[in-house]
Image (cartoon, rainbow, N blue to C red; front, side, top):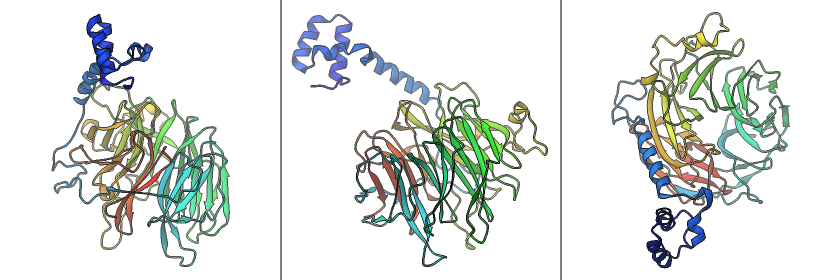
Length: 473
């Protein structure tokens, strides 16, 4: 029996709608299409629908922006090198996941302090699943399940995690909690706060010498900023009341700390929200202060409405001979963004145009929104890439992305079980990682980076699989 949206069904619907009765009878007999499939109800797809979607896709594609080889992406003088090979391509499924199978909500690779050698760290795969499970695995095949040194800190599914000082796990949950656990000294859950009333979908951490700035974003519309004191001596983290907060008109989607243009200043906070094509900038000290916005569609009304779903800062260049790998204020900040476009996701890569920092914070959001850095209001030229990734998604998707080491490419998730690699020079999809996840299932979680010098991609999906993608077996 043909699928309800197969070409044969679409042809049969066209014949019926246009009164080709005799031709329809012969076609039904030869194709095996049933009369009830032709009816299709109110949601039946037609040839006209397909043509209209194609016309709309072609129209929207006219607004895409890609770059040619050698174009300057990050402000450097030398020719830009695009996608490099070898790249991860071989899927290795983690078979040691304990039962029962559940959706993978979050994956990352953390580097834990060794309990025996204080200065050594061990790369470890971390993933979360409902109802509140958190698992640790060895990154080396056969990816042994590692003992969890602390009980699960939450009463609901864990959505975001980050590691502080290579030992303290910060995690957020669907119930609005923020928790800190000790993964090294077996001291269990140290701190739990519940300032949000709904899902905490965003967690940003900026680590310093005496502690860390932590920001959370929830589907209750709130963004909270905390200062977590730790100290050089490695004392127990201290998490108090939020030092700043802001309530947005719509739910926040993604938050990100970026370096301040002023040396030795606290970082700035970048945020996106639903039903808005603007990126919002905030100063976090002495209080959370709105600085301005940067539009992702500066020259016109967007052809289709979208939201910036996920933000990721371009990783720093490889370490210098002295080991310094910090992003400097002389390097333009580049951010990659996956969007909520349907039916196919888009990728935007933008150079941040940071608003100027007023000496005295002004309550006027409008005046601050019109104040930009000395580089000028150059929002149009700041959009470096605006392209379609061909990753299918729906209005309920949560697209993720991860930069390749050194910023030579971007990996994006999709709802078809495929992880796609995009060249940041041409803006084209040059790699498709398939065969690891079930076809047609959502890839929900993504991490990319180096493990013992080898480039690796880790993905988790709603098929319950966690897949490690390697360059070689």
